Each structure stands twice: as C-alpha cells, then as structure tokens.
Length: 137
Image (cartoon, rainbow, N blue to C red; front, side):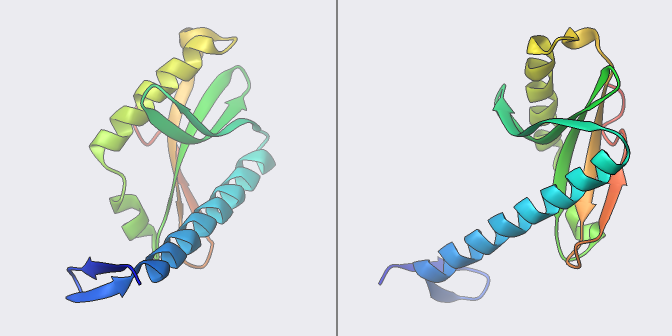
C-alpha cells in the first residue's frame, strides 16, 4: 500500500484515499462550473469555451456577451469567503495572460471588450458572481 504523509494530521494516509478526495474535488468543481454556466446563459450570454488552456494558464469558462468576452474563474469551497480567498494574484496574472492569447485568436481580436469575473460556489451549490473582479483589462 502506498502511503502519503499528511503533515497537518501528522499521519500517513493511503494514496487511494487521496485519489478519492481529489476525484470528489474534481467532480465538485465540474458541478460548480456547470451551475455557474447556467447562470450566465440565463442572463443571455453564450458559452464559447470551457476549461480553455493557453498562454500558461487555464480559464474555467469563456462567454460571449454581445461583441465582448467574459472570462470566468470559478472557485468552490465550503463558504463564499474561503472560495474568494483561494484566488491568488499569480493565478489572476496567468488568467489574464491566457485571456490575451485567447482574444488574439478570437474574431474580435484583443480590441474587443473583455472582463474578468470570479464565480464563487459554496458547499450548498449556491453561486455568487463578482463581475469585473480583476478590474479593467
């Protein structure tokens, strides 16, 4: 049996348990992203990409809002505060770089309107969207 040492708990944990926890987190993330996407679609936006990778970063959700683009980072945690705290400045930079790469190949180019939203998902599946969370691009 492969063991992993959990420094916080001070015990060795089987690798299978870690994999199961990672799988649950992955599925919860996908469910949160789907919930957020439905919210945006209900507001008239059209999804154009999910989990898009490029420029050294990943963007969870890209939507078209008229002629502009909305880049969304989805953060899920037990509560909204913990979800918001999990977004780092380095991650925001990577998302901005990836968005620039995406926009360069988009029909509107880098001159189209862009905004960066953060969608928070709590443990009950409720969402809170912070529009233009990164400021102007």
